[in-house]
Image (cartoon, rainbow, N blue to C red; front, side, top):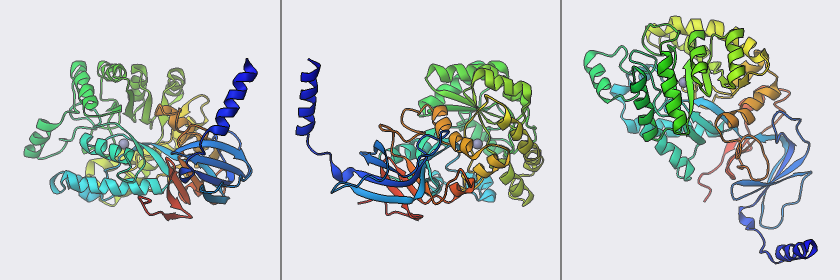
Length: 441
Ligand SMILES: [Zn+2]
């Protein structure tokens, strides 16, 4: 019986038509880190078809007639990078950004976002999680990338960050009364009390949010001098997390102060952004809950420089300096703490889009091995985003999101700041350090 089944299968294989070779690519890798966290392989071949990886083989397999050969035989190949914390529509022009509500239309911001998306992809980030953008804009950009209409990374999006009135995400903070009244009339992301916070989550979901972000504590860049401690109450955080989970969404908390971090973890968040002030007690709670910590180390550094240069509102400088001063030392402890899950995230939009990979050097300087740093931006970030079945490693069946650098980033992590090759879903966007014509035909 088994033998006859086998014979039928062999017969079927012989009779099966040849695969569509036009879509097929053979990538010759000099070295291949297919599973970050494990040792890299030597010379290897990745076979890609229909946007997915179909085979990973030792050595350099010859490409059959009709298949595209991509020669990365002198390069180091690894999975496309994932940034778990980006604001794709925020630009680097900080003076303008404070006034942009008055001077820019949504269309102007959207064009900026299109350019940011292209720059992000060219830097080797094939997936981002956007944690705070105008819902119609981010869902349009997300869907446009998904359909292949615009060039950019895969986007997993929150909508607006949910915040208490006067909190880090209240857009009316510090505005003249007429503008504040306008903002209050239209804002749907501020909430006070658990019932109201349930409503705020449901509205973000109804507007297309795939993940829910809320501000558990004050923030560095909001124009309000409220410090970096906890501002949201337990019942509000619990209401937000439970409502997000009821919709199958993960919830992530913006939190600097330890009291806010602890409250968010107790409320059941899936991750904490920044987590600036931690100690052994809060790190133990991270371990216990299994929540991810997303460090965003380049953000406070960039914010201090901008505030000193007068490019940020006056209330920002003291908070930025406080956060930056302590962030580096705290992250040394966080990275050394066994069992604390870390996912790569930069808060890019505070710093420049396309410079996301500069975060890696800060992580390594703070004591993380290059191997683990790469893992946080691949295997671990894919897990945080709930996308491990398609992203994070290079294995048959997974998305062909592939990048390459000239030298091993395990030896010099800054290699990731100089990505030479970018493929997303089987489409080449960068080759030999040069952007490729897009769309390809
Ligand atoms: Zn952010």
